[in-house]
Structures are given as structure tokens and as C-alpha cells.
Amino acid sequence: MFWGKTLSELFEQGGFVMYPLLLCSIVAVGVAAERIFVLFANRSAYQSFSRLLEEKLSSGGVSATQKWLTTIIHPLSIIANCSLKHAELTQEAREEIVNREASEQIAMLEKRINWLSIIGTLAPMIGLLGTVIGLVEAFYQIEQQGGQVQPGDLASGIWTALLTTVFGLIVALPTLAIYHFLDNQIAATTLRMTWISSRINEWLAKESLAKSEGSS
Image (cartoon, rainbow, N blue to C red; front, side, top):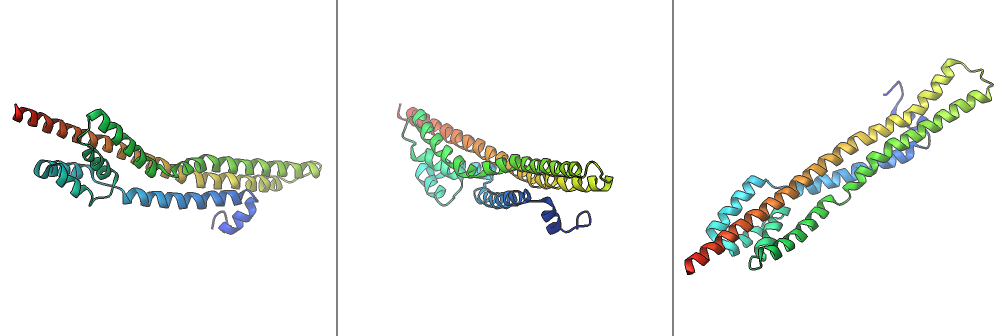
């Protein structure tokens, strides 16, 4: 119960604007749930992964590390595997390929999260539109009655009009919070992919230097 009314009663009292707000809330919940699932399905502990990667490279070399990486499915392992797969190329060419792969992984993680940003911006505007329409109707009724209106009648009209703004904010605030959470997690994953690529470049450079010193 809210303000002595059920949600269905408040929904009906808010008018036709409540329907696009309901649609926005359904889409937001669906997108947020699916993106959170994808994000957690592709999560990885950077510290433990980078430690294991260095151990595998030191003990087994490139081929053994690649076999290990194929058993792990998340963006960090994909980037590491891509970098090792092109170990014979120059660092510049390898980084270009890795950057392309990283952008594909980022695009996969970012898929549809912009919908949350759009809904978070749009929902308050829809709610405000409902409020303005409600106020126009309330003052139109006052004009029709020749200004002979009781304060309670005016308060009732304004109270009803403000409902859509309240529901617009209720939809927008959690939607924007989830959007920024997902965006921050993706930014952190992007940074970690850069670190992994840099670590492999460092290891390959050291291996190349060791081989050249051994042959001289």
C-alpha cells in the first residue's frame, strides 16, 4: 500500500503515461539481468590469472600456455591467447591484432547497456510529461468551473499529476545505478586486458633477448 492505495490503483490513477513507464521498467529489468549475467559469466580474478599465466609461460612456454588458455573462457584469457598466437610477429603488428580482439570483447560486454542509459534519461522525462499533462487538465477543470473550486479538488488534481514523475524517478534511479555499475566493471576489464597484453609483450621481449644472447 502506498498513500492508502495499491500499486494497481496508483497505476490507473497515473493515466496513459504509466504504460510507457511500465514498458521502460520491463525493458530495464530484462537488459540489466541479462547484462549482469554476461558480466559475471565472463568475470575473472586478475591477480590469480596473471600469476598463473606467468607460471605457465615460465614452466611450459608458449605452446603449453596456449593449451591452458583454451580451457578458460573469459576476455583476459582470449586476449592472452590472441597475443601468444601471434608471438612471431613484431610487437607493433601483434598489438594491432590484440587491440582489434580487445575491442570485439568490449563490444560484446557493452552490448545493449546503452539501453539502460537511454531509459534512465527517458523515464523522468516521460514522468514529467505526465505531470504537465495532469496539471493542464487540473487547471482546465478549474477554468471550466469558473474558478469556483475547493482547495481539496485542486490538491487532488495536483497529487494525481505528480504520480507520473514519482514513478518516472523510481524507474530511472535504479536503472542509472545499474548502468554505471556495469560501465565501471567493463572499464576495469578493459584496463586488465591492456595489462595482460603488456605482460605478455614483456615476457616475449625478455625471451627474444635471452635467445639472442644465448646464440651470440
